[in-house]
Length: 328
Image 1 (cartoon, rainbow, N blue to C red):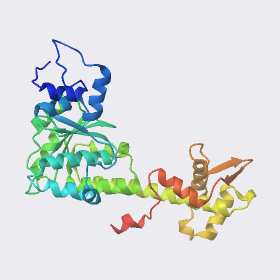
Image 2: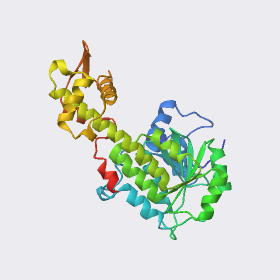
Image 3: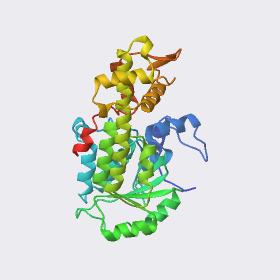
Image 4: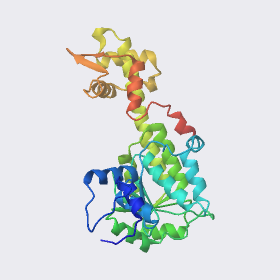
């Protein structure tokens, strides 16, 4: 328990008491008023620190752009803003907030811990990690300060520690390998944000690449791209089978017959084999998707290919030409 000194008028306004109310001795603030404070300030601790001008202030983020951001700020790509701020040593607080927003945009539950001797950003789900954020005008971080990071990790009982900076020296990377810390350059964070926006990669899939100690480098990004290509190919197969179903007569809704229809639609190398078509049909008829139905040994479409494409986009925005990644 810590003693604090707060102006009575400010306190009354904070908890919704009358202006002339004066506490007499020890009194308990009702749960409903506490909930109102948490709704307004994100936590009681943040509210108290706002009143006293000290300590840390915790800011929770959701995936949507903040209403407090100007239209001009929202139009600027978040990844670009992160990279730019990371190379300006005077924008360290802005960078911390942007990184918290970035991880929130990636689908993680993230919060910015402003001020005080604490970590900069904390992720609570689907992994629990502390994130140290470093701006460097030079473009590289010489040392991750492993001892300080370990203290923050223990304080929050986190499982992982991540350092975000514009870049890292070889010595910093070696130190991170030894200490079990993950190093994430801001341009790689920007690349992850681009892929999240385009393909809806769930945070659970990103977590495995953000918890492997050492520097997140191009090889990890290549692995993510390889997985995306596989998923994109699978989605294209689903849409092709859906179109074949739409063209087929009622008695032709089998994998073998659909493959013959697909041969008339595409070049041989583009036509999926019978096993892939069977898997696609099973998925399209899944109760959670219901784009096709199985009856008396035949599959029939329940909607058009165009409607199917709209629905499949909701499952991660995967329907995109693979050639876009190939060109990169």
